[in-house]
Amino acid sequence: MKKTLIGFIIMVVAMFMALSGAVNAATKMSVEGAKNVEVGEEITLTVKFPEAFGYQFTVNFDDSKLEYLGTLETVKNGSFTVAFQSTGEERFTSYDLKFKALEKGDVNITISDLEFVSEDVQLIDVEAPDPITFSITEPVTDPEPTPDPSENTTGDENNTQGDTTTGDENNIGNDNTTSDDENGNVAGNTNNENTNKEDNGDETITSLKDAKTGFDIMYVAYLVMAIVVAAVIVKASKRK
Image (cartoon, rainbow, N blue to C red; front, side, top):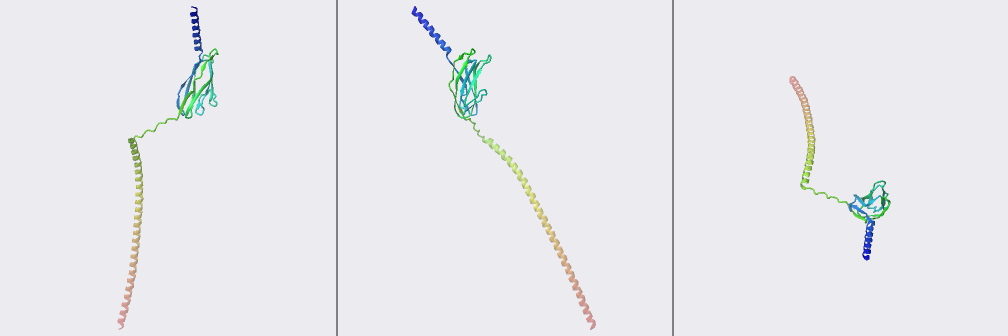
């Protein structure tokens, strides 16, 4: 009977110790968020932890591949500290870390130096999460759609018609201009020829007039000579 009682006591103590250890066991922080992002994208990682009245932890990251977008923390050499303490009824259970992907490659983010306190200013045992790892890749550009031959042909025909019409109109204008120039030149040449002909006609008439005048003078001279010769003959006849 005594051995049975001692065994029961030992079992109860062991159970109590086990329960006490479970209560005091550290709670591990967790991190939720995108694991694979592209260059230029923004990343939000949500860090979750047990309810706390105040907390503090340090974040370390590769600042050649990530840019921290938070405005409340001071970043130096890829490291900054997050710290908050409630001033009233507020209690904390999570915090968002925001980054921008700068360069292609694998990234590690670690959280260390944890301090969490309860409302009665008692330390809360919280374990840091595993390193946060993800990949940054180059943006994927959509390939240009393959043009539809029928649509392109129609478009080309429309463009060709538009260009041809404009060109024809311009050519028609040029042809008219050329015709006008040719007609003007022809008309001018015709007028010049007519003028030349009129000038030549005037010269011919003048020449004829001059010739007629010379003929009349010669005729009068011959006539006078004939009269003189006749008079001489008559006088000679009378003397005989």
